[in-house]
Structure formats: structure tokens, C-alpha cells
Length: 191
Image (tube, rainbow, N blue to C red; front, top):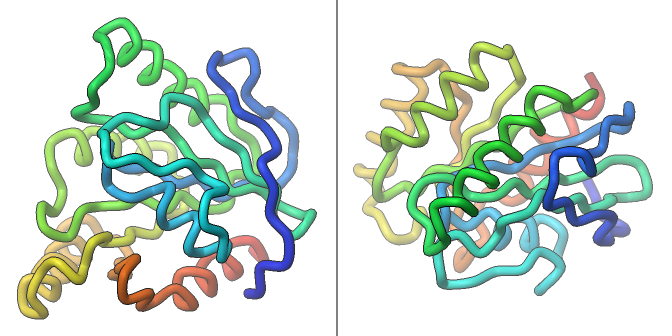
């Protein structure tokens, strides 16, 4: 897939502002500070379209990016540890839940997992909710340059065997498997 155009379409802080139309959507979700915004920027060949930060929990909104004037990437807030108040954390959790209960024409969920940590309890909690809804999913192991080859292979095998997920490793620094991720997104959009 070739990305020709990309632009911020909408930033949503409340449930009533979520898009409920039939446009095709690809959602990105993962723990705080797992690299969602960085991955989106790399896929789009943009430096700062999706805002990145070294502080966990920077994304506290649902961000829609209009891609190739035909579909949306949706950057969801991170879950798990974040440097935000308890009230704000509850609002973010409700926003994510609302997104998944109201979204239409969601073609793929890209769930990002830190390759050094594997699935943590918050990941498993989110994953069980998503599996119940029968969404198509792709797992991306981020920060794969920070783990040895055998450790990465063990993580991939574990996730594939335990959860039946398709798993692709990715590193922002090495830019490996970018095309494979885009191919999976394109395939989902064509279904």
C-alpha cells in the first residue's frame, strides 16, 4: 500500500464526538508509551502528524487521521500506567470503551505490545474485550530492536500460540516490517 495523503481529521475528547459513520477505520491501541503515535507517523512517512512524547499517557483523546482520502487511522489513548489523574484515567477508559461499542466499519485493530514485556495484565484485559467483539486484529511487537532475536521469537511464538494472533515485529529505529504492516492494513481494507 502506498500512502499518498494523510491529515488530522478530528480530535475527540468526549464520547458524543466519536465518528459513527460508515467510513473504513483502522484502530491503533496499546499501553501508554508503547509507541502508537510513533508507529502511525512511520507508516505515514510523517514526522509529527501523531504527537509523540516520552511521558506515558500523552494521548488522552481519540485522534482520527484521514488517509488517501478514503479511510481513517484512529489513534486511541494508551491504557495502563499514565501520568494523569484518576478522574482523567477513568474518562479515557470510558472513551475507549465507547469507541469500541459504537464504531462502525472497523476493518482492523492494530494492538501494539512492547516486545520487551509481552502481554501484561492490562493488555490481556483489553484483548479479551476485543476478542469477545470478534474484531480482526494484528499484533505489532514494538521496540523490537531492544530485545535479542531469540527473545523476540519467543514473544511472537507465545502470542501466536496462546492467543491465535498474527504477530509482526517492528522497530522505529530500524524501520523493519513497515511494508508488511501496511500490506496487512491494505488486505483488511479490501475485505
